[in-house]
Length: 273
Image 1: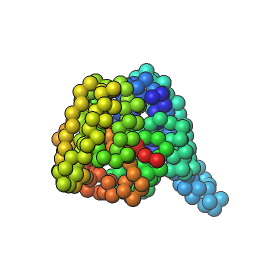
Image 2: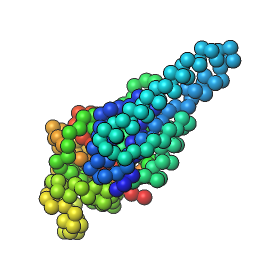
Image 3: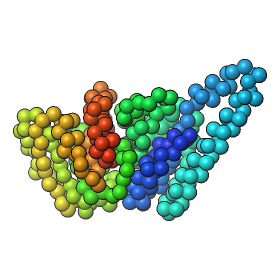
Image 4: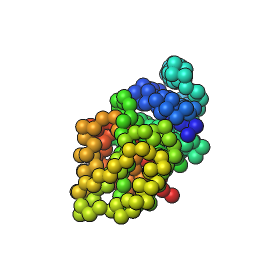
């Protein structure tokens, strides 16, 4: 992997998410592209106001521009201090349309699960991030709120093509993690293992990883998966994404709070077209 992107709110940089993105860029020896996004509706509102209010809005526009310049400088400085090659792209039109367009030309996108361009506080992940997850044209990583290192990779498996596709995408993008412990985790309500393809999965994974184990949990997938992760540290979770409706159900309010906030682990999501 050589091109990693991070979506950044141009008005405020989440330094913990940036620290995680820098870790990934250093780990994979990749260029980190900061895509700075801003909601153009704010500027459009100012422009459409009567001309006699231009004097009032001028300081506000200058303040916004200064804040964006400072945040871009902060990003470049953080990358330079970590000896990371970086580039910057700024877009002040439609944040969702622009970031999706950018994912077509990237290998990985890292996002802050709380990123939102609405004034009121949203659930986690925000509506904006759910849209990004559903429409992204490259794998997406939901960054944790706090991060130290990666000791274990948990590959969520449900017997579907989507889950195997996500496993392969993660494996191809992160060969540097081949020495980490790999746990292939399956959850189903009946408790009957779907690892009837265990031999084939093992054969594939053994070409890339040294320490592989399989684990089966019984119960509802979301509850058991997130319950299993509760209390774990230094793990990276890999899962497949499906059509938007299924993705929305997966990231319901309750489960999202567990995996992203309470459990606080990075989550790799890849689409199966």
